[in-house]
Image (cartoon, rainbow, N blue to C red; front, side, top):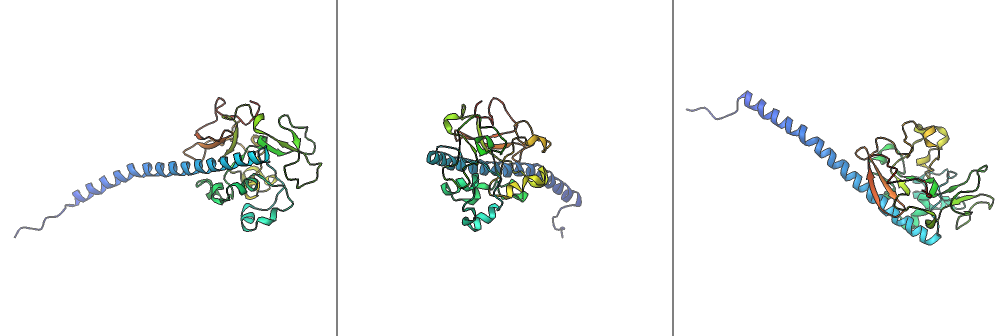
Length: 249
């Protein structure tokens, strides 16, 4: 009787080697596809937040104000919306009535960093002025549309007509700032309702470029950015010709 057909040890090892090579080739491609999908999800989040910001501006004539005096966490607000009563509202809370979707603040990559909110707001689009700070250079100095603090508190309010180049002016981008990165004075920014955006971030956050984008970024070593005209785009690095944090540029 003839023996049953089978594979020799060498043939099995060759097949296993081929399978290992194929896995080595396919896994990076699959990982890249997954990261690309995360990037698209993040871009969609920013696009929806951009629509909410546009609706906010249509209602109040100014961009939201970025503040740092709200101590409650974003998760606390989602559990109890009344905790902000009588307090200055930050960007996430200001935009909330115009979309009411908590997932929009969670980038698929950055939400894994123990941060409640994944997006950083450009403080030059509206912020609370320090007590010893001069009057704002752009935009009027006034109280928010709905006063919630003493009238002596001043605010930098930016209206869309004061933005020289909406296609270049940054509103939001995917950069969660954690307290263990920038020091205890941060007050756990991205756990708070309002993730404040420091003007001199490069002085205490080594590795941050002049554009305040960490290199490398979270999405295939790049960043997703929302601009004042409503468009969103991925950039691998800062570009003076394509973006600006200054509304007068």
